[in-house]
Length: 457
Image: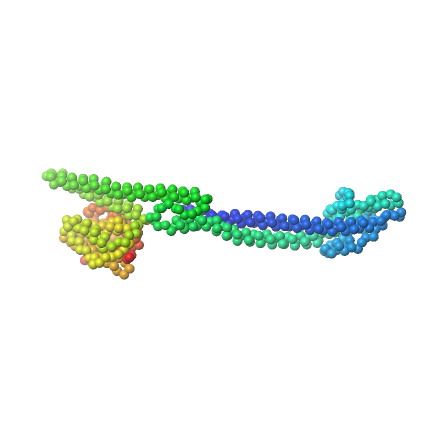
């Protein structure tokens, strides 16, 4: 299963952090802009007050215009910072006092309120306030323009300080947003984690509908999941039914064919016909065994992920399978010696364990010579339940157990015996599914020893 480049938690965190970063930048710009404008408005107000204070000291006479510049006007401006201050008083376009090159306003002031403008002067940026006042001189009204300028070092210092504060606020806001994003992402995704944990705790056989309480945004997911579980349950049920019906519908006709062929063999006196009928019987036996073991293997694969967890007596399971195979063994005069002195408790799936034991004993009977004995021992040894099956058959033929347990793989010394190559595969897979083990070895004196173990209950 491929995973996305970013998880939902990472995506949510990334989106929240991007939003927080944008808001932090906006906060920084807003604080800096508003504070800068406030500082500029404050300085303009003080600069305008100083200009008006000078304008109020203008006096007209027959000789001309006089002015007594108040000390307080410049002291107010000097108290803010170490800025330089410039002033200029013009009467009818002629400089009365001050810096005669101080830039004039772009437009003449109108009314009583001062006008403000910024200009470069003396290699510095200067903020200038200008106000116009009419003065009576020798019975005529002369316009007098009063200008006061101040460098912006103090305002720049205030702006820098405000920028630091705004940056601190932005960083603090982002840090708080980071913590809140972590908490928010965990809180938002917690219902998904709880739903995943509830589903993950289920066993392989638990195919009930999910009824875990979830937010309404997750309801479509839960509905889809329940629909999938329902379809899976129906499919598994159909599979189990198919396997059972297939086993019945395949084995029964083959058994009928074999019976009819054996009757025909007994009634026929023609040797060629008898050879043909024997070949038919062998082919039917091979088909019946292959079909049966293929279906047994399908059952093992199907049930291995959905084991029935039953309390069982391994000795009782082995005893039942042994008695079922005893008539087949007696046809070859093979004695089945069962040694099971007491119960051996295990937990597992009865159907699979019976299939594994049946294949073990069937192999032992099939490859053992006539008039021989097969030893079957069931014991509880330490924390393990063990089943040993020992015969005097053909042995492993130089093959390793791993090779013989592969699907459709048979030893080189059993080509003349009907088989499908699935028996030991089934035993191996059943042992693995139950947390047990399976081993084969050559028996001293000839034959094979099969060891099948399970955890002891």
